[in-house]
Length: 433
Image (cartoon, rainbow, N blue to C red; front, top):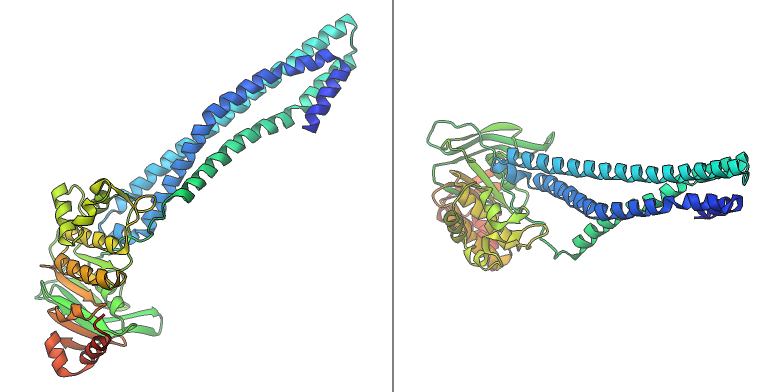
């Protein structure tokens, strides 16, 4: 501002007509600024939105990687990220083009102002009203204005970008808090193998750190359609074994073979307590498991896990947007969504890893019933959070310190008065929570 004022004073001191000629550039600069602001405001806002969409899609695909792998959606999510990235690049190019045109028009204003000063200088020198040195000084003073004027006008562009960013920030701050939880189904199937067992895990040893095994030569077999429950104290290795059976972890030693149908969907599906809800409609979240499923199939899956009531009661039913930026689902609802996806995916083998652990007592009982319905007719390995699940299983496997120490039916293990009987007695003493 000081440079601008000093230059105008200098031009006026040389001759007021030099100052008047220089001021002829102002209307062009003002029109250019107005033209730029009118176009840049919506463009920068949209650019921020597109960038946010790209970031959301990328982060969502990473955080929900287990679900993406489970339902073989990697190619679809990669394509979505590529599309969002292409949109972001396109808007960045538009913004760059707009800025280039903005500065080009400012250059036109500079050219007009300088040309008029030179014309005025020529006339004044020819008439003897000014000397060549004064005309030259006036031109040089005006040239000195180029940088500060352009810098000042460029601040308007920076302000527009900042305003667009602030609008996004305020918009995020105003959002109703959304649940970060979602569905964490993971599935990687081992090669099919002939034999009487649907799943055979033999000689399983696993180290998270070399020399510190958490599983020691575990053998576990599941017959087709059999429901086996893993029980044991925390740290016994139940979840590690379950994830190895599901294919989420590779064992350090040993093998897992799965004898199941060769359909397009996953043969082994893991549902645990770490759930993920993708941003989109409730129907979109369900269709991850079976793209193209009919509305009646979605309703049947929700009904099977006891979720149809609350799903129908949503403001827009299955078209309600859930996840980040949408309606926040409760942990119970998110877990029911995971189980509904399991029903739609229809895998022959299911692994449930304490899928009802985070729902609270009442919610857990409801989820246990939903889980039992979801695994009906399938081979299932269930890591039990409550021993009531074990009582209803076909077989119970008791783990201690990375080993299976007992196997049998609920009644048989109680009669044996071993590790399972002690766990049952301790659980019952706490009121069968």
